[in-house]
Amino acid sequence: MSIIFQARLSADSKKLWIGEIVPIQLEQEPYEVEVTARGSYFHLLVGHHAYGNYICIPNWDVGTELASLSDSFWNLERLNSTKLKKVDACSIAYALLELSKYINI
Image 1: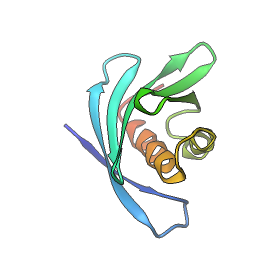
Image 2: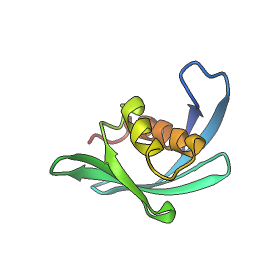
Image 3: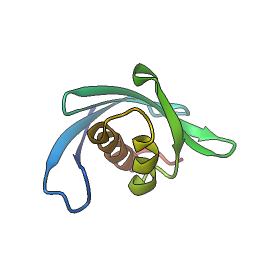
Image 4: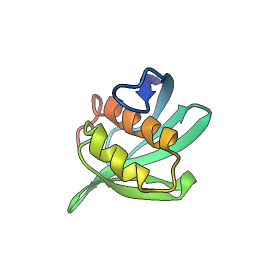
């Protein structure tokens, strides 16, 4: 099963692109998925710790805290503070938003 989502640079941007989420493990934390968008591949580990939520993207050497998965504004701010390119951070933030329909952390 794969999940298709749309991403964009900002809420008022007309430039859209399609991404794909391939679930690896959605039964228990850490949740694990593969995301592809705009030619980039991300292996995401998402979960909850004592002080909130987190994301780890080991194949990009990135990790940061998250708000709820559906809070794309805050999550995008956190992802933009890493070494990810803005379009990649947007892809991941929108993937998390779509993923919030399937898991609850």
